[in-house]
Image (tube, one colour):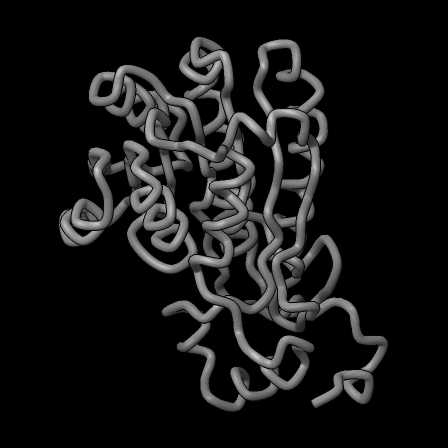
Length: 256
């Protein structure tokens, strides 16, 4: 069960953070993995290549640009012979209070987090259809669809928008044998989260019933399951991976 050794997987934003964790889980499972990013991908490819038996390649791409997404998909197909799984993970989360947010800041977040997902999926659709078992997995967030946090209204809006896209895409693509699902991470310890400071990390940890921040691999494990043949009857779903963070009615409800 749950054999991914023949799968061809594309992970956007795969050089660090949650994307790196997702790519690492697939690499350890023996899949062929392509990681895409705007930045240099060489070091990440070398690290991931040592994890499993499958091939690992890097692709320079900007998900805001449909032509770049098309070139990215072509590179993966040329290297692996097809694409079975697309993990549309590339995203940004700059802080901007609502009363000071500029049109440029709003556009940047929506361009990467919403349009970037759609352009990525569009570019990969021919290969996903040819696969006969295509899987699309979006990295959303609990922020926006379930919770809110000051300074991230544009980010929260983008993550909620991803779920709207997911539900209709799941309907449209079901006749092709393609499933579309989303993972909603809670507070996952990544480079970006570390930059928010020790006080933020401590406060967030106290709010999580599991008593710890998540790891990027926690998101990767769910992504890997959703990519399997066995998960083929799951589509249009958004699943929180948050250690129970959204459950407490108040901070006093978290037991230690």
